Length: 140
Image (cartoon, rainbow, N blue to C red; front, top):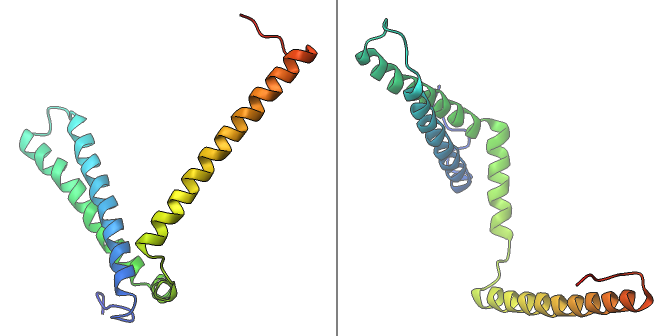
């Protein structure tokens, strides 16, 4: 059957997220195409009515093709098995608690600040050393 799901029920959230992401990209691309088609001014042979249908119909057709393509890719055995395995691995991950993440972020910020000050002091020291031995001349 054409619209049959491969391994239905497995990897549901990963497939759903992938399909939603691809769908958002398809919508944005078709909207951009819709806007670009407004700039095209056909000759007198095309009536304004036909222009409206073309301007809306071409992006709609592209969206339909992209929707079918996303469905086929998300449900192909190769990519579906990959997404099922990915979701299985993500369930095995031990995620840090909010408190651990906040504390780790604080440690990183303090470390970066300390290293920045240390590097600034070393840079200033080398600048003064090079000025003293005559390698670096400061204008001013």
